[in-house]
Image 1: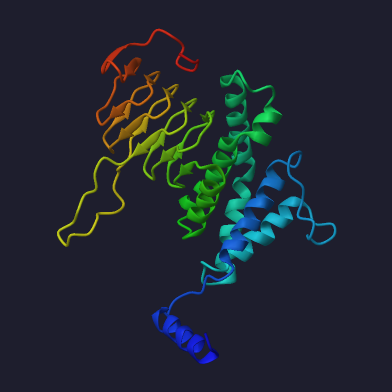
Image 2: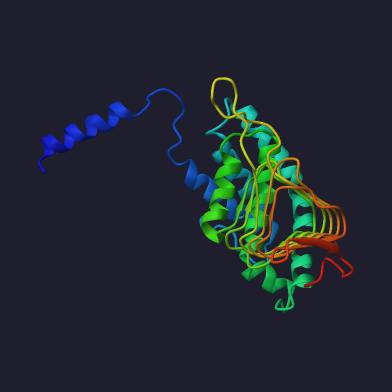
Length: 282
């Protein structure tokens, strides 16, 4: 193709591009850098500092630098970016405390885990949960784009899709993890264990008078404390609640609530009282 035809194609592409609004070129790379710096700050035994970082810069300084770089794309002023950066930095110790509880839950809940180091270094679910917990802080601050970009980075890397808006308690473990989906308004209690291909999703979408989807409403289920949900289970709906201590068997499809202490089994479609420790394999 000659240069004239190539230029005509470029002109057509330019005419289709919205020229108003923010430019986000480079934001994806900044978010990736931010994630790497956060892992170095949170877990320095496992992740090294940026080799291109200025001499003498410690890991939290690197996080602050990458925070400001990413936030500059989605804020109006330097002061606003600095405010959000400071809020995220203040939350890092608490994020680490919760993540350490997640590591311990994985180690205790998986007989194949030989150490907490193995969990932190090799389990894709821990990577996804770590990024989710950081992104959730951005989400709570109503920072646009960055929290979803962070969890989609985790989705690409691990196959685990956790919306940053979900609320998830401590000691959370996803075993294997591939294909897990956790929707935006999901609420998960303490010491919950999921297996691969679990979906915590929306049953249906409310439509407004103008025919568009109604946003900002509760669409995803509530999962109580000490719940185990086995592979392939699907739990849908914003009014669906799984009570404390429940066990949800593999391939179960649920759109109704389950009282505390019940076990739901797909092949016989019945519920029975759970007398085992729900945190253990059944």
